[in-house]
Length: 539
Image (cartoon, rainbow, N blue to C red):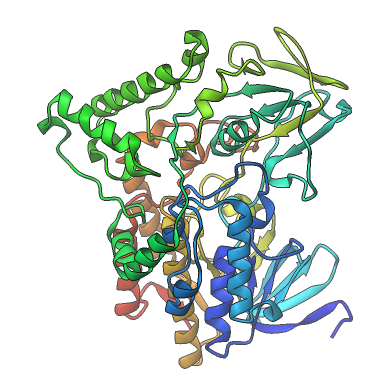
């Protein structure tokens, strides 16, 4: 064995975030020889990396935490309805320490390439430091939002102040008092950052590429008494999440056209005041399928924005015109729109006055120059497939996964891919993880993958691969579910659009997530097990 080869394991898990932590627990408690390779210096995934001001759940905390352990549920106290990044990271460390999982993790171990060897039926993984691991099976738990993207403007390297993506927000304290800060991007992350720092900086300039719909998060503290009540109904909470299309405790309704306009507005007034995604999950389902229904809903939210922003011209700039409400990822906020009422906050619409170049002291647009001390890129991620594209993954006959997915990913149940044996994806492309409450989806995925690993071991199988026709049938199901939704024409990561990623910037639809709902997805993967995995070739 080469001195650069670190060792062989039956299973290597990639990523020590929310899904990787649960995946390694399931494997080691079944006696599987498994380790986790994590590219960062510690566990936590998105909650280790995204330390920017305002970073927090937009899922109710008690629906985001793991459901697999009653003891864990009884011990952990969520302190906020929508928990912030520091507490979220503490939670994941608490879980890892409670179940003694760190000893199965290797940090600063970023995988650069993976190659399948048919003769030995193993994967060889090369790390960025040149070392190698080999494994019978690889399980990717790399997360749908793990590869940040930055814009490409002339002169970016010339800027003399501090500039970074929100994903790389400094771990050390970054005082912003009195500083001139520019934020590029007003997606979910940008909205959280802007709302949080507006009253802390000297001057805040928001460079908006495209406005997004948003509504109040309505966060609050969770008392001891309320947490006791939550613990008592955890079984009910998770049952409700399993029955919900989006994995939340929200149930949609039909009957948009059966209600009067006054009744619809009364419902929306009620939902607007409720915490979290109730405005989506408890709304009329027709707003996602019927253009007239969505337009009426969008007009309602637009009026809400106008009522919160003092300057009518600024308000109109904050209202999207390229997509309807709920047809892209919906950010939730706390006093975001009110930030633009402050004297120290300025909104720059890049649709009207584009960025010309960066300068040593700031940003020049077609309308003028903005002096800045700090520039924050809140410009999103190469969603869903980005983590896979970053690794050179070679399957049977050296075929590249990146090439296979160039136009659009193709998978079987979002878990396996024909031509890439013994490679399992948790929260992979075309699973339900991209469209539902993430931890609820990943527990479903991890349990399914773990069951398949156990099935292979019990039957002395060393190779498994999805059949090509079964993969295409699932792709067709993903496309069918996608094309029913109004967002099929939206430019966002739901449709694989990203202006900062080559090949994802041409407006062509990439079918990256399954939008048939969590219950339907669970039925599909459960049926595969019940039927004895008929779509898999095992040997």
